[in-house]
Length: 171
Image (cartoon, rainbow, N blue to C red; front, side):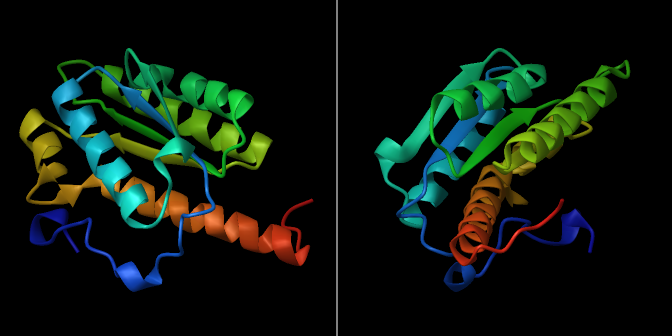
C-alpha cells in the first residue's frame, strides 16, 4: 500500500514485548535537526511507553547520517546493549550524494549487526524533499522514530528469546 494512504507508524501495542529489562543505544544525526530530533523524541517516548528505563537509554549525537554506523559501533563498544537505533534524515538534493550516504549507512549498520550480533536499526529517512521528511517525523505519515523503537524492541526480544533457549541461528 502506498505511504500516501496511511499512517506508517500504526502498530498493535499488545504485540510488543516489554522493554523493561532491555538496554538501547540511540545514535542521532544533527543534520536536519528539526527532523531528526522529532524522530528521536518519538523513539524515546515509544521505548519508555513499552517499559524501557530512562537510565538504560544511551544516546550519541553525531554531525550527520554518514556518521551513524561509527556512533553505533561506539555505543556497542561502550555499553552492554540489546539493540542500537540509528536516526537520521538525508534529503535528496541536486546530486546523488543522498544515494551514496544512504547506501553507506545501511550497509554499515547491516555489517555491524552481523559482526556483533546486536541488532542495529535503520531509522533514517530518505525523502525526496523536506515536506516528505516532515510528514514522516511526526506528520501525516507517523514518525519513523516510533517504528525504529518498535523494531528495536522486537529484535532485542527475539535475540533474548533465542539466547534463553540455546537455539543458534547461522554458522
